[in-house]
Image (cartoon, rainbow, N blue to C red; front, side):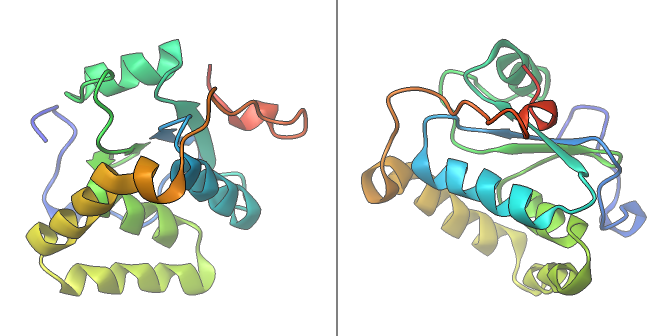
Length: 148
């Protein structure tokens, strides 16, 4: 990305720092499942979440060159910068620690191929997994993990 955050891959640590933010599509059933997956496995509370449809999510997307009105990717912001598509998924999984660090093996596949697969899924996510009428409302125990 040309956002001033990018560094060569060798300089990037694998795990996000505390306070990493995942910007996700709040009306996408698959994306909400991804948030549930991360919440259930992120025992250290490293990730916070912002729906793309929220003012904070829209601002973060725009700041990093993504169109908030055409959400084709989710965004992971961590100490190493802004990450999208398959790189964001790999970093988020690796950031969970433990056996999830093995997700970095996905980088054995060329990024171009990983991203083609990611974008194919992203384009069909509503059709295959469904769409909610409104954005997710976090339960009170999880509210502190969401950026509004």
